[in-house]
Amino acid sequence: MAKKTSLFECQHCGFTSPKWLGKCVQCNAWESFIELNQTQKEVLHALKKPLPQAQKSVSIAAIEHEEVIKFSSTQSELDIVLGGGIAKGGLYLVGG
Image (cartoon, rainbow, N blue to C red; front, top):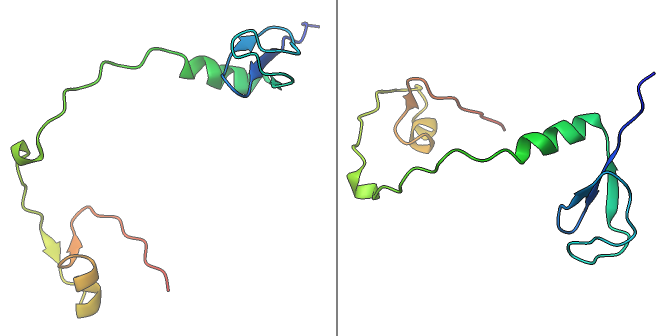
């Protein structure tokens, strides 16, 4: 049977350790470690991967406006709320 491996993470700074520590060596917080299970370790590992390079920001004036085709819902008040009707490809959640 395989030995269960644990990973402990500081709740204050995110420092991880293979064993429980009473005091975090990074932020000096006491009693702040929690044990992570295998699924949580996989998520933590995925989150620590480097992020893709960010794109440069673009001025809102530089964005080209595309005309959106909208269809009437036969209820004028709903069309007003939706900004002129139901847009093709749009997804709407209506509650009451």
